Image (cartoon, rainbow, N blue to C red; front, top):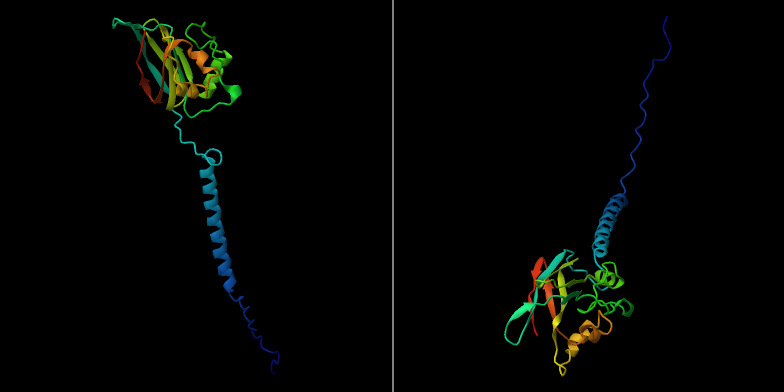
Length: 212
């Protein structure tokens, strides 16, 4: 007797054809890569801009503290010099131009005035400008701590030296000083003075001798 049951046969399933690679897939990857590079470059550029000041300006000043010190003397007709005790030394940052209501009152800044309290409004305004003030001691020495290095206008007003009655302060000096102080001519008064532009960095020493 024959076994007429059909022999089992394995049926081969057709392989699923893989989707054809589209040329747009490669282009999409390239486009995404380019967009990533552009975004990174834009972020770097914004970071650089944020390090700059307001539009149109770039802050290149070096925020390193500086010290101005020195000796102020006055001379006599005989050629002798003495310490100009009580003379005033003022430092104003040349880069600043305060608004009218931020300028200093001259009262308290003259050699004959009583010393101001360290927290006085005038001295607070001067510090906010980035400037400083010192009164010369009995040996003629002074010292001013400044918040940053850079160009400054320095005003020295003598305590003992008086100008001749027919000699007026230089108009250019008064115009520059008037940027920082109201009634600049009243600050100088009849005293001899020296107004100069100085580059202050590190520990700068500036000795001044004014005629009697």
